[in-house]
Length: 447
Image 1 (cartoon, one colour):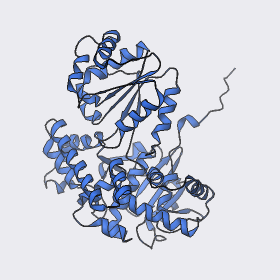
Image 2 (spheres, rainbow, N blue to C red):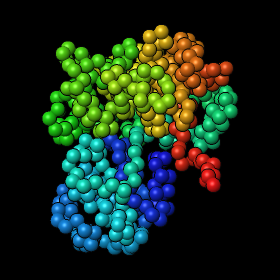
Image 3 (cartoon, rainbow, N blue to C red):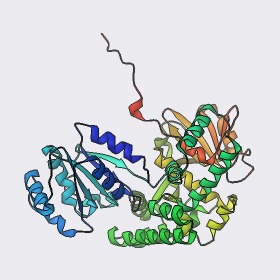
């Protein structure tokens, strides 16, 4: 299945002064698969080390960490040709061998081969690495499949996506037939989420029972990771993880510590929340004092929502038969938490930091995004009354906030009004963060 990260891998390979590439992300999102395919298709020789499958490989990094010794040991172990400048060495599950992470500096300095590292839970095992290869790694975050990737995997003609993107850019209404088909695909995506194995099973079998079975296996793997990799707060992390669906179902979606324990205090659970964030399992979304740039300094760290990293997994965690309701087209108020979760997931994958606003006399904005030098207020509407958005109207009237626009994602057609842009849910795939490398400055030195 096509993944956008392939283009970034090709750009990295073309760099003559490349660093090692570190691909991070939660489990089961296809990191290993995509690197294997890239290595086999773009290099004459591909060497893979997986410390989970072959723990004995750690011995290669147990002694002297100079490049000559490590490469000699690699060559002896794999007994494979390693032509210089044409070999990719893939170090998978690198979190299991902290010394390998330290050794990257010396291997990159050696310069004979290209290196890709990959692993899950790298953020939660940072204390075990004795010396980080600062300046020798390029970090690339990978996420579950986004909606555009899901559409491509589903067989949607690329011309259709191009057509929809033109509609988005020109603010034109798509044809009704394409609109209805894309809404249907979006409902499927709510159920499957973006885990590649789940998507593949859905597309091959159309069997929701098999989809949910795989999702529950992944959730069980997450729980095992908590037991294996968390230090002394396993119970707290597990409680928060299991409470995610019920907390998102609350009226304002805010995570309440009282749901864990009536006497709970944030300082007691900060490490547990951070663990879930670093593991890529949960996506924190902080409330703002006001939506003014820079948004970061206006965050309220004690008021937050906690979204699931993959919406399909969230559906699988719900006790009710939500999959049947979604397939029936019933994305009503009761499904609002699932709908908001998928937008949180897709916004993060598109490069945005997610925040929300809940303020007296204004109301509640589902998301506030910073896109370059602009602030966008976003509402996610599950029902047919999407033209009703009092909080958004109130926020746009406050001149000091200088909100550039308001966007309402809904099940209706594209509609561009004076201050508010109504977009069908599926057009979220065209809302992207601005890339700093595309911004140039007209600089003239002072003489």
